[in-house]
Image (cartoon, rainbow, N blue to C red; front, top):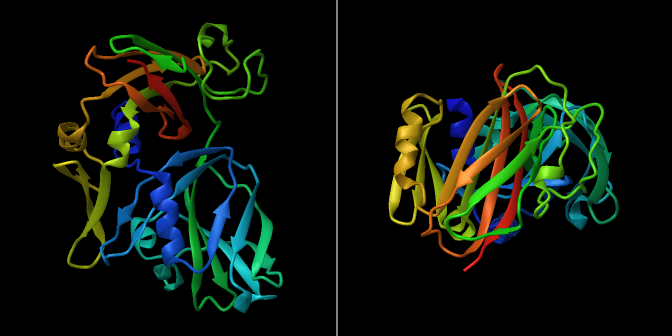
Length: 323
C-alpha cells in the first residue's frame, strides 16, 4: 500500500504547467519526438545535474497497444532514415539522453522511419509491456540522439468518475474502475462525469488484489513545484530535491520507508487523499475535504497498483472547487 501512496504523492509533487514545459522543449530542441495518447499526465519541469531542464506531458498507454507517433525535424534532415529505439526508464538517461549511446546502454529497436522533405515523419510505435520507457530517435550509426520522449505503459488502464465541481468541506466520492474483457456500462468515455458515479457498473474480472488511490491538489500548487537531481561522486542520481513555494524535501531515488515522511511536510494544505484495496476491479474512494479548501481549479490524480507490484492504471482529470 505504501508504494501506491508514494506514487500518488509523486504524481502530485511532480506536476507542473504544461505550457511552460512545451515552451522549454521548443527552446532547447531542434527536433521533437511526439507520442500520441488519449491519456496523459502532467510531469514537471525538471532541472538536471548538468543544468539542463526538461519536462512535458507524459503519454500513458496500455500494454501491447501500438500508437501513432511523429518525429518533427528540420529541412537539413530531409529524406534521412532514423532508428526509433526504446529503453526502460533510467534517471541518468532522463537527465542526459546522450548516455543511451554508451556501451552499457540497453536499447531495443522499435522501428525505422523515413523522413520526408521537411525532415519529419509520422509512424506507428509498436506496443510494449507494462513499465516506464524512454523513446529515442537516433541516427542510424548511433552517433547522436536527435530527440527523446517518455511513455508510461500500464497493464489495463483506468477510468475515474467524479463530480465536475464540489464545495469546500464536501466529501468527494470517486469511482475508480479498471476495464475488463467485457465492459458493460452506459457511461461515456470521458474520465470525469458529473453526478454519474453511482451508475458505473463493475466491468473488471474479480480476484486480483489491487490498491486504489486518489489525490486532489490545486493547479496553483502543481505549478509552483520544481525538481532537481543530486548526484553521487560517480555522477549517478541518488536523490531528488523537490521544492514547493518555500518548502523543500529531499527524497532518495530508491524508495524506502522514510520517503513518505520526507515528502509530507511540503504537501500543500489544499489537498486530499484516499486509498483502498479491492479485488473487484474497481473501488469507491471518499476524499474528505476541509472547509478551508480554497476555491479554484484542482487536479485529481488516481491510480491502481497490484499487490504483485504492477502499475495497473493511472488517470488525471480536473474539477472545480466552488466558492
